[in-house]
Image (cartoon, rainbow, N blue to C red; front, side, top):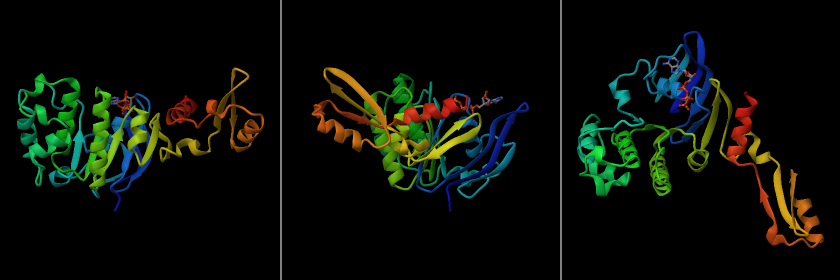
Amino acid sequence: MEAIEVTGLRKTYSGRDAVAGIDLVVARGEIFSLLGPNGAGKTTTVEILEGHRRRTAGDVRVLGEDPGRAGSAWRSRIGIVLQDASDAADLTVREMVRHVGGFYPGARTPDEVIDLVGLTAKRDSRIRTLSGGQRRRVDVALGIVGRPELLFLDEPTTGFDPEARRQFWDLIRTLAGDGTTIVLTTHYLDEAEALADRLAVVADGRIVAEGTPATLGGRAAGQARVAWTEDGARRTEQVADPTGLIRRLLDTGVDLTTLTISRPTLEDVYLDLIGATR
Ligand code: ATP
């Protein structure tokens, strides 16, 4: 069984489509990332999947149930990392994690979760005394304490320093390695590239491209950009297959230590896709 199956999903606000017909399948154990510009319809889609918004039309199955009708047993199998869920709390990190864990059968122990998110040194600190990035880690802890089968992450690393982001990525990989299905909404393309097995780009309420980070939007087939220095000047050429060009450069005695070959980045492909919908 798939973790998520969506067909023809629509959501209309005051007669305007925020989600205009989305089809989506997320396999169990997969890390799936939703990308797209502000207002594209990502949050609306995810909140419908979480059972927090009603849909206008379409078929939705999440862990085999309709989120619009599912009960508390279904809800306990899902983890949601909200932005700023733990803001301004007067509790300590451990008290908060224990409190939320109490709602789930089979929850992780507070100390296990706190270690997983790298807050061991802060476990007895009050949440309101934590930095912004540390509070986001508390949000993540609250999302995973119930040992969810399916975890929704909405821009989870906003405000993280680079080291914390890398640690967070490792945590997500660990969770996925244990079989957790993960739906990640992010504006960081490097994050999507590092984590996602598959991703979908949403624009104007529709999916405009879907694939793996390596193949999205024809990326793998994109032209290679070859650059080198010749007679003291930097030269570049775009070619489908750089082999012939490199042979020619070899024959002409170009200094190959100046040679670089690059493919379109995920960001290049993403911006092309978004640009094409404008
Ligand atoms: P962001 O990257 O900024 O979070 P998003 O892709 O998550 O954007 P949504 O929040 O899903 O976008 O919004 C999609 C569209 O629906 C936007 O045009 C937004 O203004 C509209 N919208 C969202 N929620 C409501 C609401 N409660 N009432 C009316 N319109 C809404």
